Image 1: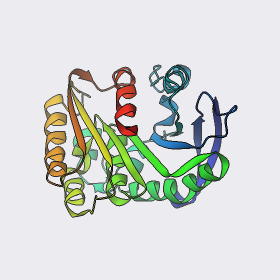
Image 2 (image 1 turned 120 degrees about the horizontal axis):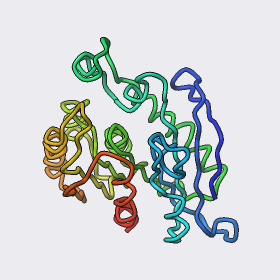
Image 3 (image 1 turned 30 degrees about the horizontal axis):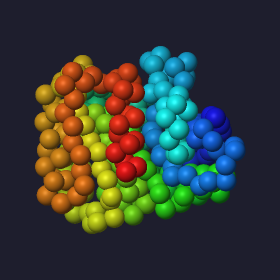
Length: 256
């Protein structure tokens, strides 16, 4: 069962954002409470007709067929200009504009406010509206969504304690995210999953760069003696079809 509504993001000037909530198969007929998985790029998660590139992650079908006891909350990205880069990057990047986007300007830097929105506005609303387990909160995202999920895991590991970062664009804030991982007390982080495909060529960043970037982040995580799982996916590409295939096993890992 999919429900949709809009929420104003006061942390980003009051702009409204589409929220999509997919409830477990037995939600209406039970009195159970459920963990909540927050995900970015919400328009791509449930229905092909809503997805940016015509293929979704199929997570509604997954909840129905797998009978996984989980609420999934999708937050649509900001489609305006390069605002997705801005909101999913915790720190500014002065070179990505001219080097990759071919536009002058500094991009990124709104990620902290975006996570504050999830933590202080959206999560309380979801916990009040639905039968949730407020202390069992997960997060997952891909590409830039993986970067911002990793940031959330480091800043609020006692809240977002089970996190998946798929095909992550760590390169956008490579130095900063590695430093944050090193500096953070991650003792509250129960599980962290990260992966990268061998064919993650996005035309702007090639597969070798993606792999090297993720390997460097993984090395920092390993030094923290955490439960971190890192997969290099042979033939893995940078699009929803690939993430759709991997997500069931990832959810299983996070919820063990």
